[in-house]
Amino acid sequence: MLIGYVSDEDYSALADVVVDFEKDGKLHLSTRSTATGAVLADLESGEYRVSLVKAGYGSKRVTLNLTPHTPPYPFRLLSDTLLGYMSPKWVHGGERAEFRVHSVHPYRLSLYRYGLQKEFIRLIGWYDAHGARTVMQITPDGDYSQTGVDWNRIGWGSLHHTQYLTAPSRSGLYYLHAETDRGEFFAFPWIVAPPQPTAKVAVLCATNTWNAYNRFGGRSNYVNARHLPATPTVNSRQDLQRYQGGTYDEWAFPDSEYQPLSFDRPEPANHIPKTTQVTDPIEGRDACHLAPAEWRLLAWLEREGYAYDLYSEAQLHDGTLNLETYKVLLLPPHPEYWSRQMFERVQQWVDSGGRLMYLGGNGLNCEVEFTSENALVFRSQMPQADEEYESRLHRRVANEASLLGVRFTEAGIMTAAPYAVHNANHWCFEGTGLMNGDTFGEHSLHERIPGGASGHETDKRSPLSPPQTALLARGLNPEEGGAEMVFYELESGGSVFSVGSITYCASLLVDEHTSQITRNVLERFLRE
Image 1 (tube, one colour):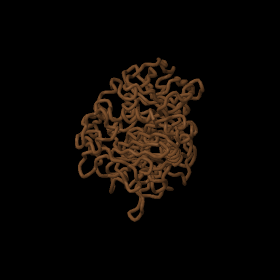
Image 2 (spheres, one colour):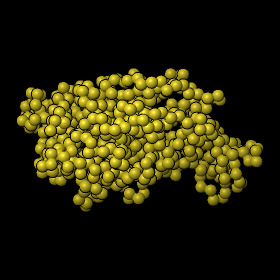
Image 3 (cartoon, helix red, strand yellow):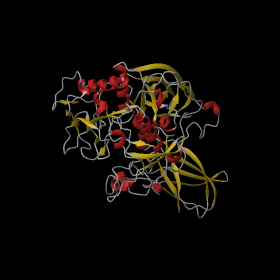
Image 4 (tube, one colour):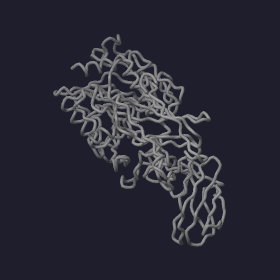
């Protein structure tokens, strides 16, 4: 009889898990999970206390009410890995958030601010408890990618075990450093917006994109995007929908079939190693376009002497980021996922005179809907061949090119190259000495797609770009895939500067011309 399946936080099948079934206070049966994670046992109906044990994973007890009609139960175990996250992941200065850390050993927690340097703020303390492994977290069973892991609740049993921090008043990207007495290290981000606006520049962290790429629990917008399959993964290349026919097979289904993805999960992709400094190359697949890459943009702003206030995308969505108090809004390397409310707020602000600097690529390409303060639904269904839509966002909301001047195309994807100047007489090139045809952006910290400031994913003008959109430079990527750097201005004074490249921000700290061009634009946007 199939009782259920056992899987880890990646929804990978766990074999050889010892599973004991107790009934009426006595051991009734003991078995082990199979290669597919299946738990097989001949059991009568009734209530069982199920204990699951496997080396390298947190042991667990579950109460199971078994009937002839009970579907296979989705047991989940959590590996002995140091992890953590803040809840919520963004606050205003002076507000509280809870740190939620999973560790099987005592750990030390410290707070840092990530700007031009990693600035130590304060020691939070050491965390342990009286029993063995008692700071270990327990995940819910089933699909907690939808509902969140809700750490510090399951199995803790006392409010004294909740841990809260009050955010500093200074806005910025903060990181919590967790380090065990065995030398394990994990760092996780915390966005602190200002209690009140303090600067003329607002910067958005692409937190919706963070969530889209976070597969903790076995789902992201790229892996098992609709829902968890009925059985855990044994081999990703053989089992996952993403690898069964084409890159976008995951997004070929109606929007109604996609389940939410919760922010209430740790984000391993945003971890930054302890010794990494801001001018070091950006290592890894996801680090090159998520928070570690955004850190490089913030460091550049501080190096150049520009004050800024930092916000999450959720704070733009809910209106707590009041755009009217800022002259300039900066978008980071990969702001792909926006809600309708976000798009409309920024469009109205630019129409009324706001200045937008889009320093990324593949931006505003897909609509999301907040199902709660802590979860998103991604409206990722791709346009059909006979539809007149340029993107997933355009299928549901106004086209992103109408705001940004450019939109993503697959030409040039996963390549990188310098830009070539197209309009050297434009004021953005002042002081660079660049002439038409000259190149810039040769240097980059981006290790996933090395080669230059135009790359990874790139945007170009479209028929729906504002008619006054001017081409300033174009990436030299193969097959006409280079990013188009553009600018347009409205009669209201509203202006948009777009670089159309995910790798652009990875060049700011190490490429003189890229830095000068960006500084010229920001200076003009702040001055006028």
